[in-house]
Each structure stands twice: as structure tokens, then as C-alpha cells.
Image (cartoon, rainbow, N blue to C red; front, side, top):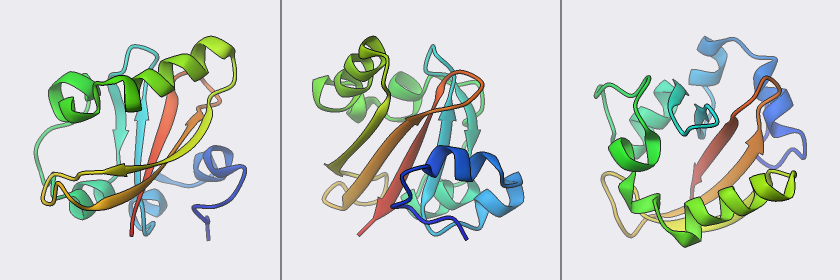
Length: 122
């Protein structure tokens, strides 16, 4: 089983099938370099309250989660990308169903370009 705290979380997830990723106990989203959703796990849709709304191909930070389009979230991601090392972990408050819910966020580069966002609810 893939652990959220694994230092190689992105590589661990990339070895799984989409169905296995959907069964993880945390949310998993893969974005391309332009921030368009390439993968949005069923676990993330369920755990966040996003539900069955369409996600694939949408710009994550403007069309799905505009609350994360700020210096504290997207700014961190862009700064890490610019430094050449995208491997972040930080806390965040807010979810689709509960704006006060605490999340642990990990962001890591995807092996074929773009990046993964992993969200664990406390």
C-alpha cells in the first residue's frame, strides 16, 4: 500500500493503476505544466465533496479550486518549479464541503512532466 508520508510518493503512485489510486485514503490529482487536470482520483472527488462534476482538462486553479490560486498555495508550487525541485509539503485549510477542514498537502513532480497534488484530510 502507498503511504502518504513516503518520500517517493509520486513515484509510488505512478506504479499503481488508476483503480488502485482511486482506493487510496487520500486525494490524488495530476496536473500538466499549465495546471490542467490530467487525473482526478475518485477518492479526491469523494473526500473533498467535489463529487461527479467534470475535472479532466479543466484548469485546476481557476476552474476547480480558485481558493488555491494565491501566493500561499500556487505561489509555493511555482517557486518550487522555478527552483527545479518540486517536492513540497504544507498544511492548508479548506475543502469543497468544509472550508475549515485541515488538509496536509504534498506536491511532487510527475515523472513524465507536470506534477501531482496529494491531499490528506485530518
